[in-house]
Image (tube, rainbow, N blue to C red; front, side):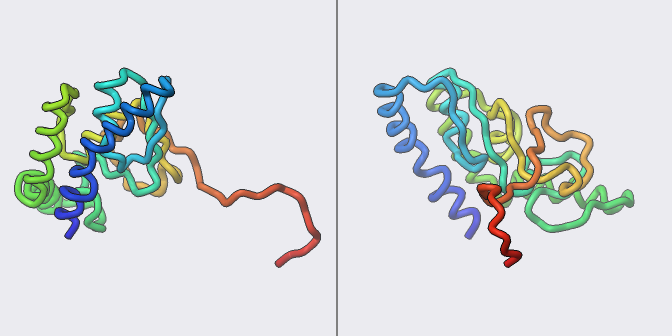
Length: 171
């Protein structure tokens, strides 16, 4: 299901989205784009409009870690040699078998439009294409990793709006 969604919900509409963004840019030549980290048009915006992109990360960091399991599996980091080998194997299988088709589809789309294609899978490309990723939470919400992207900045918790006026009510 997730592979289908990657291909048809996230990657499939990118060409149409870019046409819409081109129309917006013709009326309003923006200097910056702020987008969700899962907005798959980020690399094309960078290529076509040559503007910085700031991405908001509200999901756990999905950039592939070299010393952890692939993102999204919910597995705690291994601390044994066998466990680290298993992590490495799962990263390889995830990229080259499970998500082979979405990875190939997305990279082909980017190349077709003249975008730079960073190394890695579809998630790595999104993180590495954004100039800054404002990640919700704090580093302590993430597993320790030796290769956190230099463009990732933890923004703290996302709290609901308040007007700071005390009403005297505690409920």
